[in-house]
Image (cartoon, rainbow, N blue to C red):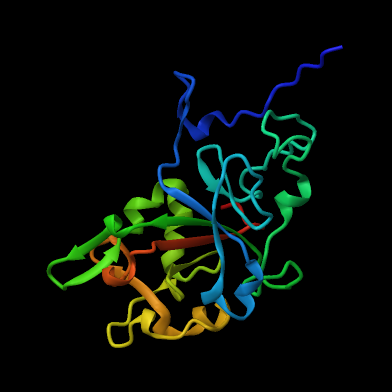
Length: 242
């Protein structure tokens, strides 16, 4: 007896299906946080891994679904643990309802009474750095690069200190807050990041955002320090429709 089942197809997350190699709407390199517990004490030491489409995402990772990175509250994640996939790494071990609802506080635990998030990371390079010739400030225009992966309303919350949408930048072992403006008198990458994410968010000198215009804004970086990559992490409160 042969049992035929339909695979889950997230059609809206692709640009086209006109060939044997469908084009995914994600055009930037995606990464995941490996050591989520480091958020509690040593955020500068978090380990990162490249996302592979052949592996299950981690419980704390946002899904790209219906063309956007969204929470399970906004777009129900597909429960596909009963499906058989060709990839041996996913065979009989798909995405579960427990994974969909699991999220982590900024203390790196699932047990906190505070807000809990799912995260997604982006690896950028020096090619993504923009120099404002008027101020000689170099920054990454994440509004231009990453806004397309979220709803506009959700992405705008990132820079307004709305705690439903949070984010940080990692360059080497330095961490900066994406929800505070850059302090030219105390650059974020010159301050130790051997501390918790909560302390980073509470430190007014850990702000990174430079506003060139209303549509050109993002974290300030020193291009001489970014040869190993610029990592942007955005977390969404999984209990909210974002």
